[in-house]
Amino acid sequence: MVWTSPARRARETAEQLGSGHTPELQEGLYHATADSMLGMLRALPEKVESILLVAHAPGIPDLAWELASKDSDGELRRLLERGFPTCTLVGLEFTGRWSELSTARLRLVRRSSI
Image (cartoon, rainbow, N blue to C red; front, side, top):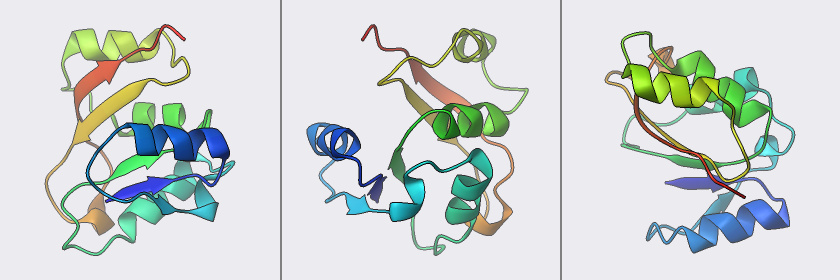
């Protein structure tokens, strides 16, 4: 599943990622806080196995930092600590129910040079 903010730049980014899924516009992602995005994620149906969020700072960087578990790879945590430039990609993984999402393991941090 791919959710994107309705902002043009976010929609274009979601389409260019080529995930094979049609991005779904989510009005709630525009100016969303980490807490509101976490609430959206916790409301996902259990049949959803993964989701890509394309949204904005400061919500996305705050959410990534809030979810990144302390036992995540140290180098990935340091990359995340150094900032979150535009077009940064973060991969997080967790097991359990969406409704119980509170921490996740960092699997990927790619900082853009844009």
